[in-house]
Length: 283
Ligand SMILES: Nc1ncnc2c1ncn2[C@@H]1O[C@H](COP(=O)(O)OP(=O)(O)OP(=O)(O)O)[C@@H](O)[C@H]1O
Ligand SMILES: [Mg+2]
Image 1 (cartoon, rainbow, N blue to C red):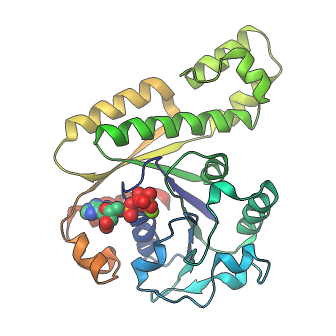
Image 2 (cartoon, protein in one colour):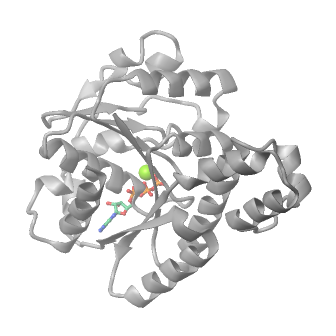
């Protein structure tokens, strides 16, 4: 089972569109796939499937009425399932430590080929923990300067959270004061220089850690995307993988209005091809 997580810091950049349609394509190529709406304060994954009145959802698990497995419903597509959050009232960021741990433990016990965690905007601790649960943690960005700033902060925070899985936060803030924009390699260098016992463990943890970046709703400003790629590579090194672009398509709106999944329509366009390229890199 592989977990894909979708983050990006900013709202409205296409995270849910990405999650729903990647899920649709995976199911169409034969993979049993579960979408989990973890944007509990602003859930809308159900809308991509025309589901208006789900008989159950994540709230039943949170209220201890059902097991996680029993909160899952089938979409209108074969092999594509949904754990919706339509009736959730609490923001993921406000989940207790115990609830967050229980939820991630139960997610890992499920039996699917792929699970996709659709996250909301922001970088709160709970959101970052679910993001890091991904075997394929995806960060989406648009070429809008506001989104670029947020996606960089998101990726940087993801690295800090990842590093703090290995190094206690006190030790880390001793090396780098809070708020400083250090590069992961600088931490490794500092640990190696001081012959820190954390060096080997962190090196091992970062050796097979990758964040997948994808440009969303792109137009023709490929120059900006190339600049972003160069910048991220310089800053984060080989831990960043560029997965390509998902071009903006005016037809998307028609599908959303009809509560239909975009990839269930014609496939001969750049947007579906961009999504398909990403799916192929996951299998
Ligand atoms: N490639 C695309 N072409 C055209 N429209 C798109 C594309 N991707 C997303 N959209 C549209 O952009 C809007 C925002 O997308 P979406 O809801 O997926 O963003 P989000 O990042 O999940 O936002 P939030 O953080 O608020 O949940 C939606 O109306 C969606 O249909
Ligand atoms: Mg969303």
